[in-house]
Amino acid sequence: MNNREPIHQIIQECISSPRWKSFFPETRVFFQLQPEEYAAILAGWTDQYTLWETVYYHRMPSHRSILEWYRGTGLRPYLQVLPAREAEQLELEILARLEECYPKQKTGRFCFVFQGSSS
Image 1 (tube, rainbow, N blue to C red):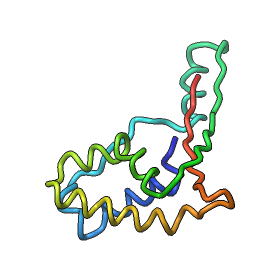
Image 2 (cartoon, rainbow, N blue to C red):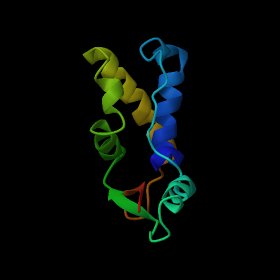
Image 3 (cartoon, helix red, strand yellow):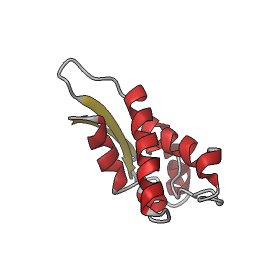
Image 4 (cartoon, rainbow, N blue to C red):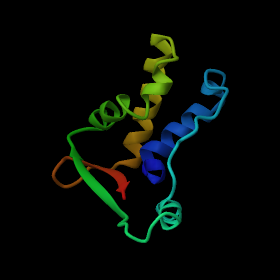
């Protein structure tokens, strides 16, 4: 459910920009539904279900740590198709945007929000 978070929006904006669009000609399809859509599906099968959403607030030591987190998940499909030099450039562009969107807290850390849902 991270599509509402700045990291996800930053990645989508970057890969859609003229600089990167030729590397990613097809839009990536995310196979996730909104909570109410899951509820509608489950309601068609049973009324014995529970649906909830969990929000995790990770305290990250740096913007690079946020990038590293996403490198193994949401960035992986993009980084895998890029030559090494271009992958590095995309990461630098994303890192610069992360620095704009994730302010440092009083503790010196950064709050990285990660949403998930279950049923």
